[in-house]
Every structure is written in structure tokens, then in C-alpha cells.
Image: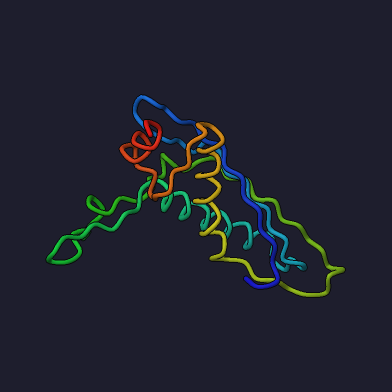
Length: 143
């Protein structure tokens, strides 16, 4: 991932009465210098973005005094295909740079801060806890 420049913007809607955050669209721009395989890089960015949205909205490890209690998909939910937003990937190819940057997993880390920033833009409230579960968002909106 070194030598690559990334940008991410999320479009969200928030239902204040329920605290539900819906991610409608995510746009990710990637500038690795030379793009060798654009289709593969696009696929990696899309997959990482889906994982990042899942982290932002759903994934939370639960535990108690005896240990981890999140042991299946019911107790550790992930994003469902029906919840995947529109994802737009913009690849910037700059062969004049003369170097190759990295791609792949870096995309995973972009969606959550972009979604949190979009939530702030929509509500004026900073939510400092992930995932953005409805009860957390409701509490932040009331604060």
C-alpha cells in the first residue's frame, strides 16, 4: 500500500427516529502510479470497500467474563448483499511516475471514516464508536 494515494467519500442517509444509517454510495479514488491490471485493482477496491462498510455498520466482537461470545454470523453480523451500496472506483493511471504503488487491503480502511464523516455532515454529531449500530447513533444524536 506504500506509494499509493487514496480518497474515499460516502453518501449516507440517517433516520434520526431509529438511528439507522444507510450507506447509499461509496466512491473510492486510487492513484498507485502505474496501474498494471485495472480490472483486478477495481475488484480488490470494491471488495475492500464492502468489508469496510461492514466494519462500519455491523461488525462488533462481543465478549463477557468467560470470553468471546460472538461465535457465529448471528452473534457477529456482517453486511448482507442486499445492504451493499453502490460502489464507484476511480483509478488514476500515471505511468509518468515510473513506480508501482500497492492496492488491495488498503481499501478496507477507507469506508468507515468516510461513513462517519458523512454522518457528521448529515447530523452535526460526531460518533466515536463503531459499528454505527442504531442504538449508538440514537444516543449520539440525543447528546
